[in-house]
Amino acid sequence: MSVLIEIKDLKVHYPIRSGFWNRVTDHVYAADGVSFEIEAGKTYGLVGESGSGKSTIGKAIVGLEKVTSGQILYKGQDVSKASVRRHMKYNKDVQMIFQDSLSSLNPKKTIYEIIAEPIRNFENLDKSAEKQRIIELLEIVGLSSNAMYQYPHQFSGGQRQRIGIARAISTNPKLIIADEPVSALDLSIQAQVLNFMKKIQRELGISFLFISHDLGVVRHMTENIAIMHLGRFVELGTREDIYNNPQHIYTKRLLSAIPQIDIANRDANKAQRAAIEAQYQAERQNFYDADGLAYPMHKITASHWVSTPPTEKGATK
Ligand SMILES: Nc1ncnc2c1ncn2[C@@H]1O[C@H](COP(=O)(O)OP(=O)(O)OP(=O)(O)O)[C@@H](O)[C@H]1O
Image 1 (tube, rainbow, N blue to C red):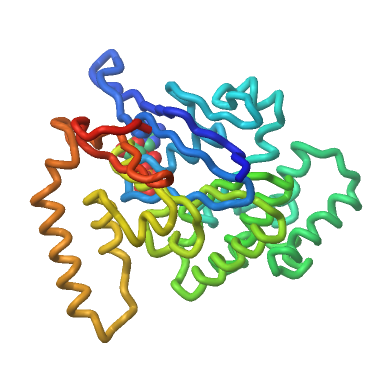
Image 2: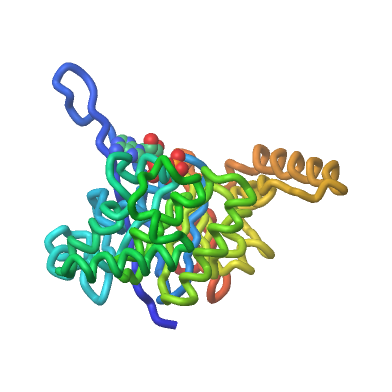
């Protein structure tokens, strides 16, 4: 295994201002000491409910959010500082795709201009080489070269996600942060886009940080997964650890929330969901501290970490 990027004790705290003087009166602890590694060519899943801090981590990694403390180590350098990112041309290697492709693609620009923008930031191609590159990128994402003369609103949601992917891969990146890349799409289109992401990963060797609120969506995409709740990781492990041997009550609750298409067992699934919810409500206080925050994680196997009360022994992450 080769580690592409290492996140160490990352904290991103947003100030809350109030009162006549607009003073900082408190903070939102959006990411509160998270550590994990993404391997080269692999997908890392980051899963939690809305507001748990997933996007904040993704944005901090690409440099869109200021890091309060901690490190983001890439090729041995701490890229949490803007000067280091510029010096290393880090933003060429790390790109982001968003959930809402309509608002993340400038509606006034043609697809050609949208895809050309990151290329122009990092390379000095002449007009014909640039056009050739854009035609190739459209081909990779399964769109005809005519698409380059059109505008985002002329495409379906799934096609727009492909355009977002074409733009993201245009700089030949090593890592793509995919923030809820399919949650705005119909189920049938979701599967197409997910398969397509796996295909470009195989062909181009790109790593993904795949952010989702739905453990069902990441299941077939990731090798390693972190479960996040209120700014902290509650559980982290391989796909097998998380899906076959979940330990934290919050992970169990997220697993029970995966939509089931299996109509024959609908009643049994509903009963199981209700049982997990009752267990969650009854045992919640055992899993969180007096402020309602997750405890530090402890290692339970070589790959599996779980947030547990501090009386239990083991290294913390
Ligand atoms: N710029 C900001 N200023 C203040 N608070 C913020 C800011 N951005 C996010 N937050 C808060 O930080 C917390 C984490 O938000 P974040 O968007 O990272 O969560 P998320 O898990 O990605 O959720 P969602 O899927 O809804 O985006 C939330 O409480 C959110 O309200």
